[in-house]
Length: 323
Image 1 (cartoon, rainbow, N blue to C red):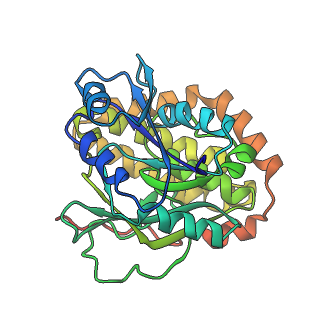
Image 2: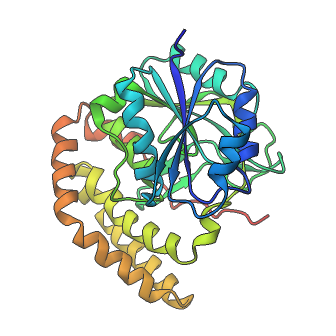
Image 3: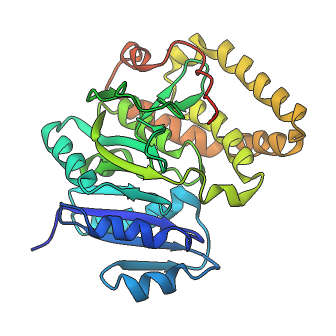
């Protein structure tokens, strides 16, 4: 009997973590299928999967399409095969036994939710990585609770602005309506972008704290040098320009410009000014894409600017504690 859930895992040079990741999915209490999208790895990831996890479906590609392009390569066939839910999971993460069943239970109980996200912990099982994301009026997304010690402060199921792409459940019918991940983002903030679009179209994002997974933070992206600064800079501009309703675009425009200046100054002081400027240039080069997507999103919008405003975090993002 065909299951209604598939877990899509983008893999790029994940040999250090992929066996642990897939073993945790084998132990799930909810029946599901698994698709690994091989995103042009140069290590032994695929040999490990093929030898130890013969039931895992592997889609092999020679090039690295980033997180956004990688998950889309798995989402497209999943939609064609009529799965009801598509879960995304990082190759450097480990799921608790009830992670998937809790996500599906919440999805079934909240048909208005196009995204269900859970409690994403660091591997020490004490500190939080994410309990969903907020989006600030300063145009900065940030993970709720990152690096805080988990003392139950995020144990209440509730609506949040965005789910984390590293361990969330997406309703297929929502993806068919709003579209897939924006591949121009490549990596970073692409999960906030798709959740923002979901909110514009009237879908909700539900946080289910009983759905627990664990994350080797930056287990993959830590290998990439200035990659993260370039894409985070580019996507900071794209996220705001694509999605913010016109009324709020101008209402918070000064905050956006101040934050942009602060980010540039910070990069220059840290010796990363050139890569930051390259990110800005790339964002402006993407203007035709941004304009097309903005028009589509705003024409398809089913909620008012006031309703979107109510979802925004009204302060500067909190300082993330070091651990």
